[in-house]
Length: 250
Image 1 (tube, rainbow, N blue to C red):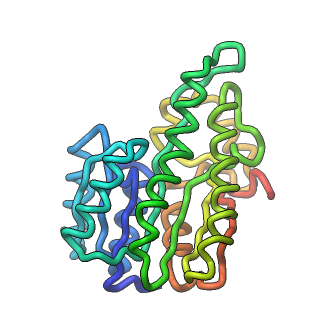
Image 2: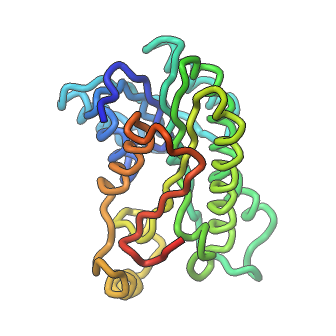
């Protein structure tokens, strides 16, 4: 699954699953651009870990819902590693807050859509012109995009469903250019996402009801994402691949 000499951008690549993706993709030989937004220390720590392991990486701050920041991310990538980009992994996204329909306003709903869907659209549009030798794009959806999500996750689930449709459409459009587009659909993964938004007892109940009887780990999701980014999955495109321990079958 070697990615030697490949150039990869990982949006939201500085913590939890994003950090695991950045480190795993670097371990396969890719030069990695780690995008972060709120916490420079997380970006620097991820880059330091990659370099300590013998890899190459830079960190670039940017809000992936803003065109100017996306353009700067691509410009910094090209400035550092050259004009060709081989891999884009869109990890940026989030639940933001649990709100039932009656508590949501238009601003909240549109922000969740923008964070999860518009970000992937903007980065894909900016990176594709640099995938001159073909390439691979891996988006992040969620089990919520398949089953509607848990309580108060309507907006998030809707956005993640849209990511699966965006993935399929891009796979068709970009396939003739030898660019593959896939997405991963994680279930209950042990990250700060669930530390923030899911009660401990709910997590314990979900883990107990999962056939593998546990939560997933960020590294397990990263391994799947990097597989989809690599030539080892060369005839897979347009797929939404579940990783949920058997909790939900699509």
